[in-house]
Length: 271
Image (cartoon, rainbow, N blue to C red):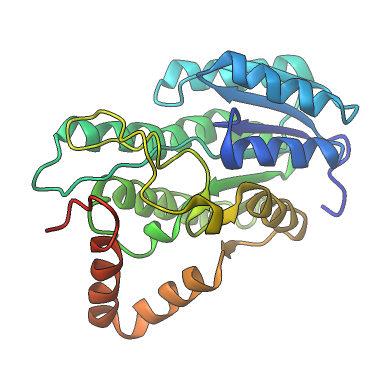
């Protein structure tokens, strides 16, 4: 897939962050885009920006935690364009609380959005993606390869996403389906601002210096390249790659390193 011109792409969580950056990057490549998120005002602004590239861009209000909304999203894409070439499962949320203290509703919410949202959208889009020999992309995380303390729900949902997508790839390896698991490291976005605390409320402020993180646009460029080259796995940032590599050989050491890193965050839940 050297050219994305004329392709139809669905991006969930497209109103901000990596999703927005992917949508704009795809539009600039000549792909028509179907954008999904809960905030229609922000979503329409992204659609308008995509349309400036001379492509068709439609906005669909959808909560990926809702099976019905995901079905509606896929139906709208097929109704408008008659096909699906790319599905980017990007919608996601994070958390910041120890498992000991977190309310179980927070764990369920993260699984509903991060894992089940990916499953629902992929299930309904799969017949069309198999027909086009298209691409399913999951925006996962380094936290999907290494458990992060105070992020139990987030890590669990991303580990689950990785396992689901890897199985999907193997099941369809003779059918021409491309499955890409992208694991960014810490990326500048609003995911930490909206991360849930132990009682389910948003923490509002990021504990990290966002200016020092990989940008959403950089992640999007890697994703677009990965789609074109039909890569299977993208592990981003030097620290991210190092974490995944070292965890295979010295997991106990990495447990301590990760704990110490997270414990140093401002107002860390780790005591």
